[in-house]
Image (cartoon, rainbow, N blue to C red; front, side, top):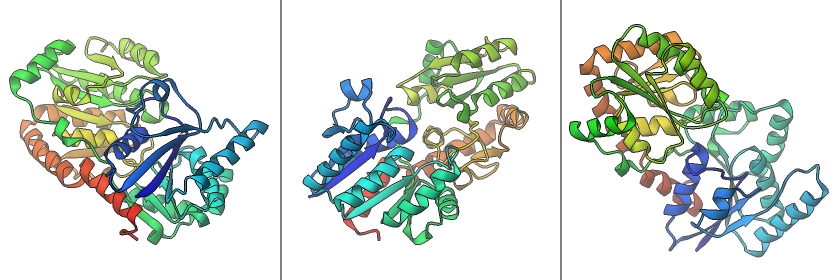
Length: 372
């Protein structure tokens, strides 16, 4: 039995990108071979009341600027040493730094560090610190080739120490639905049955650039009569985005659904989907769009070019280019043959590359030392 310590800053919601992947991994690890423990720097209401997948340890680490944090950090090191973990896997900036140092001090045999974004948080100081700490990391896991290459170049990581494990999804949740079911879902959401519906699933924060999606919606709505837009997600920018839609005259065509736990159902009501981010690694949303059989319009970020074949299963557009997104929306709305081609191509790609089973099996091989 191999004991795996996972460390992440916190988990506010189980639907956020990295958090969702980590929770899926913990839930489905083979318990006859692996014993996971989740360490978090700080707790959250969701962790306090909902998390039950494995033992949870709250380190209560706030900042190295606070004297109490040093005692808590040393307690974390002692816990790693006492429980004789075979591997520690780190996520996010703070936990990457703290987890690598603690794993090294505790003598954990295998340290794995995640690279799941392309550094919109980077500063010269953090890059320098990463380069110092990276010598203690045995393997780095990136969720696409683009991010592996980016991290290798920025942090001077040898590519032979990078492992690419794509995000996974519960593909069984994203099954094709009948026309009747699609209409019933649209009725429940207030959508027109005969509209061309474009969706986006995203946290409403600046890096996701949902404002670009709203601007594109306004342009597309001026050119196509029966088009509607669905925004599934919540966050700090929600009110601002709703005001944008109202000022653009598309409040009646743009539906802000807030935080949802029924994303497969929402996507089943859509005809196409958009990723409008200014920075990504490998988008969970695109994986779910593919699993739903939707053609995807994506900004040119992260690993999108590893997923999208231009004009076959979607389109890639420049970052922040609302005009380009709108043009593709109008084109798709008028070209139903391309929709059918994309549906089959994307479902097949999701089946081959992005299943939960494949993702978990790849991590299990890494923990077992069979992917070295």
